[in-house]
Image (tube, rainbow, N blue to C red; front, top):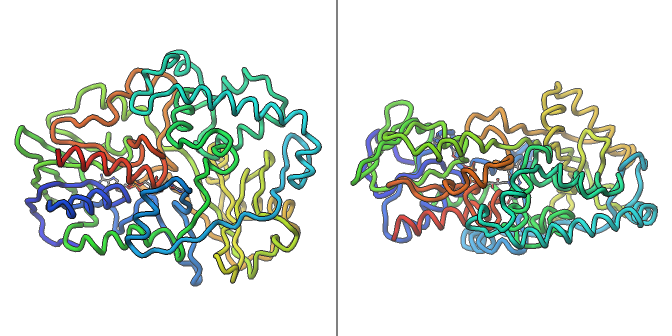
Length: 452
Ligand SMILES: Cc1cc2nc3c(=O)[nH]c(=O)nc-3n(C[C@H](O)[C@H](O)[C@H](O)COP(=O)(O)OP(=O)(O)OC[C@H]3O[C@@H](n4cnc5c(N)ncnc54)[C@H](O)[C@@H]3O)c2cc1C
C-alpha cells in the first residue's frame, strides 16, 4: 500500500472493488502508473469472504457462471482454483399454500398452471432480444416498456397464482427489490445483459451460479491487490474531484490529494453521486445518480457437521413464498467436509427480516429450514448473516436498479466519460451487469477509454 499524502500518477481510480482493482491491473500492464483510492480498510468491496471458526463464509459474491469468461481467465491467471456447484437432488417448493413438496411432486401437481411460466419466459426472451445493450432507450418499444413496472407486466400475464409466485420469487432473487420498483425495460435489460435466456435467468440466476472459488471469492481481489503493491491507498474516502482541461485532482477525507491525467470512478452510481465535482457534473448525470438506488439483499448461512440433506436426495434448494427466506442453496465445500446452507433474504424480505433482532431472525429462518430439510436443520454449528445497507461504502446490494422512466430519460448519462472522468463498476457494464463479470467488463471499457 502507498503511504504518501500527495501523489502524481497517470490514472486515479476511486474504489478498490473488483472493477477498480482490475482497471489498475490492466493499466499497470499497459505501462501506466495507476493509484487506487479506497474508502474502506480493506479491498474487495462487494466481495467478502469471512472466516468463521475456520470456515469460509461468502457474505458477498460467491458464484460465477459458464459464460463469465473474464472471471475464469482472471482466476486462472491469479492461480485461484474453481469447483462446480453441487447440483444433485431435488429442490423443495412451498408455494401458494402447497405445503412443502419435492420438485417432482410439485411439478406433477401444478403441471397445467406451470405452463404459464414457460409462456412468460418465452415472451421475456423475445422482448429482451429487442433491447440494445449499449442503448436500451433505443429499443423499439422502450417508452412503453419503461412506463410500466415489471410487477405490472407480470400481473398483465394473468398467470395462475402458483406460476406468478414462482416467476416473482425468481425475479426478486435476481433484482433484490420488489418487482414494483423496477421498470419492465430495466428487467428486460438485466435479462439481455446476461445473454443466457430467461429460463436460466429464472431457474438458476441466469446460469450465473455454476462455479465457486476454492477457499473463497476474496482471493480474487486479495491477489489482485498483491500485484498492485504501492498502487493502493486504503481508509481514504474520496470527497471531491476537480478537473480542468489537462488534469484531475482527487481529494480524500483526511487531506490526501491525488493529481492525475484521468480518474476512473469505480463505485456504484448512487455512491458516485455523493462525491462533489468541480466543475459540477451536467444535470442529467446527477439526476441519473439520484435515481439508481442500491437493492436490498442479505445472505444467511447455517453450517452443519455434514450436508445431511443430500442423503435424502435433496439439493438444499428451497423456493418458498412463506419465508422468511424465499430461496436457499447448498454452499458446502467441494469435499463436503462440512455442510452449509445459504438462505437469501431479498427485496422486501431483506428489509423486514433484516431489521429484526438477530435471534428472532435466526429462529424464524431455522423454522423455514426445518420445514424443508427436517429437524436436523436445527442442529447447526454456526449461524452467520450479512447486511449490506448498513455498510457505508456499499449501502445495499446486489446492485443498482432503475424504476420507470429512468433508462429512457437519464440512461444515456450512465457510461460516457465527462471530461477526464470515466465511469466503471458493475452497474456500468453491458455484459453481466450486476455480477463480478460485469465489474471486469466495465473496468476494461474504462481502461480502453483512458488508453485511447
Ligand atoms: C451479498 C452479495 C452477493 C453477491 N453474489 C454474487 C455472485 O454470486 N456472483 C457475482 O458475480 N456477483 C455477485 N454479487 C455482485 C458482485 O459482488 C458485484 O457485482 C461486484 O463485486 C461489484 O464490484 P465493483 O468493483 O463494481 O463494486 P464494489 O465491489 O462495490 O467496489 C466499490 C469499492 O469502492 C469503495 N468506495 C465506495 N465509495 C467510495 C469513495 N467515496 N471513495 C473511495 N472508495 C469508495 C467501496 O468501499 C468498494 O470497495 C453479489 C454482491 C453481494 C453484495
